[in-house]
Image (cartoon, rainbow, N blue to C red; front, side, top):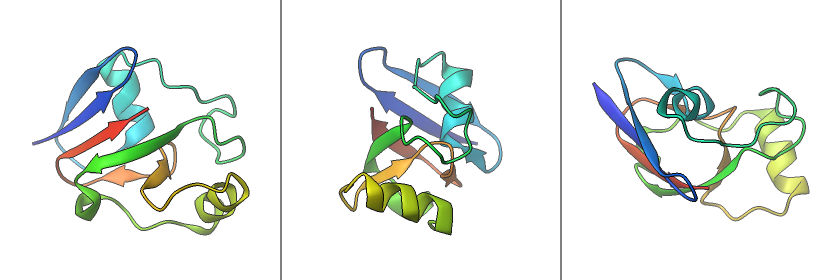
Length: 93
């Protein structure tokens, strides 16, 4: 079991048993994380900043890399719809 914590306007946390997308965890936690494209790595509205647990996240795929590059994102930023957690993680949104 691992915890994915969200810090922002409406903080929350989700307890997850297996590898879980950050976006799915935010929905489970009741955190209103934007995701205009429905989680298809097209809009970048689900961008989060990883605060803790980077080592517990999936590697970036081509779609996520493309969107983050277009957004001129910082290295600690990820798309919640394309990032999967395998252990404890904390993000800001």
